[in-house]
Image (cartoon, rainbow over all chains, first blue to last red; front, side, top):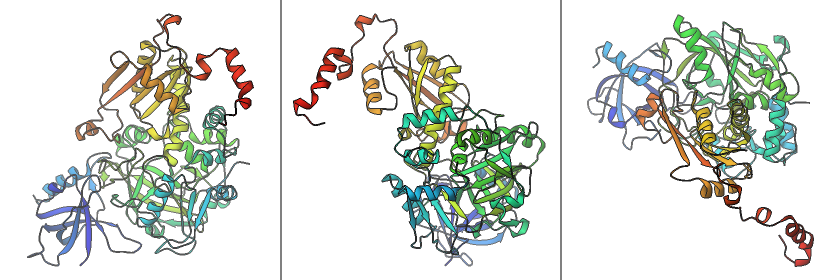
Length: 104
Length: 479
């Protein structure tokens, strides 16, 4: 099963459901840690998720969650970024974008 | 002859026993960083990793080129046993001379041996290390020289800021919001929604990297300081996609644009204060437009963390000399300033000819006027050797009055958010606090009531000192 990771301030910031996220590909090789900007469904358990893959949550100090979550990627977005000004909080900007997409 | 390139310097490091060539295959994913960190923590040599997993023969990673005082001295063509005080003095002397850079034609610049342009750009062709387990990405920019330009004055600013691979042709990074990099972006590009050209240089000559750590005043060109420090002009060449000028002998030059309206995640990263704290997702995004590089390129890594490493050593030198000049301008009667590498520019020692509350407050005032990278300042009398931390600690413990000798000031909007003890709210608002520990005797005390330091050199008269010194061998005491 393919594995990914994503960074949040707190593990508790992650919510189940359809999300807009930046995720990093953990497949070994030259392009390991490449980032994808995706629309995906995330859940604590893989049951019911189509083509579920593992996603590890990482906190703001780089601490990795003990248990993985699961992700079903619906769309890989072409934009490698979210709209925002330099030095703005990227997590907040992504959440704002998510709302505009009607995901929340 | 000054060193022109990262590679030239390796020859000297090797001759001096200061370089380890690692021929065994090493994984860029954590292993190179872990080896680098362990080596720093054991005062070991600079490292050249010559075989990197997943990468062709010849693609290399270096670590710790100037990570000890001995190697800094060698980079300045001094003996590797030169005392720190003398390295400081020589640096101070050399940077007072400015030598303009020499511009090379593109065909003469080694950094143009290979060029990736536009759609050809693929950062994953370079062994960018995942330095610490748990970092937010592969930090290609750690021991780098980052160049941006003020379009109104043509001032080309050099700094050292972290940058990580986001995708094969995007980088994200975190030059602090109070940096000169940010000053130019906010002044000349953001208001017009214009992307800002940037060059991220890896593996230039060692002194270019050291100067990139220096707190040189806005509108002054670091390249001219490098010339002064080298005693010879640094050779530059123009970028392929902008008019930025970069060190011509660099290993790798990443050219791109900082986007004014697009952002992406950066961090977290194990940073120079020695922690991976919560500074992340608050930086800039760079669309990479070209990469130029030497054949068999070397990615310059510093496995940053607890001191000492290249960052804490270089900043000790460059920051202290800049602070001494600034304090003198501010009217503080400074003898010397020392930035102990162990204090990671959070702790500064200032020697003064006249101490007391007024001086301590002036010191605090100087350190809190603009952007603030320091927070603890120990002010000591001129009889204390600021480079000798045992003497400094003794002085602080015995002369700083806990009630009258501690002066502090709170501020907002200009603190260093990498400071590990600040809480989330403080980091976000750049709120902070700085303190001056007045460890000097009050100047109003009469001379006869000032305690006399009970050391061999200070509590005995000249006659007794001479007698003991002259007879020392006859006592049969070996020291």
